[in-house]
Image (cartoon, rainbow, N blue to C red; front, top):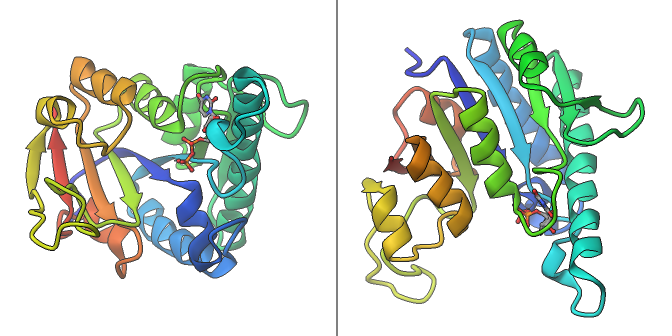
Length: 234
Ligand code: UDP
């Protein structure tokens, strides 16, 4: 039995690239689509925020203006959302792609009312284009939209299966948390999400589940409460 009615799912750019590390890995995206379809069929409302790191990040270039570099990163998230939305459609999911700035007829302009309407109709709603501003991240956009949409929880699928007290790739004795408070994430600078996004979570009491996207059926298991990720309470 699902624990949540409305969730926001974060797919990092890296996750979409799969083993390719850049661009899209269609098999990875189809597997995500299969799981999302299972949840939509159970009546769970799903919003999606993607990263852009499979193409570009604002910090990729040291030579060009940061605002312009961030605009490129922001457009990468739009490409990602259009792609994943089409993969979702190919397995029978209804989708909409919303952006906080006009992209002609490629996307629809974000408003809370439109997004709520779509989500209530069972349309998987993509929040593309980040916050629409430079110097922010897709993590910040994720928390912002989760709070605006009054989501029950954020589901953040990562290449790592939860929050650790130190980097398990460096420290073999690193301890994984089953549950941790967002204040501890902030105070210890645990780097689960960037600081601005973490503060937004704390101020608005938005919980977050961090789980390993590569684990079998992990999105469905997380929604059903049978995952072994880390719950970040807020
Ligand atoms: N970005 C931005 N404003 C936002 C969201 C994203 O400027 O509100 C840009 C920023 O340059 C960022 C890039 O988009 O580096 C891609 O996002 P992110 O690094 O969060 O992607 P991920 O690492 O999750 O793939």
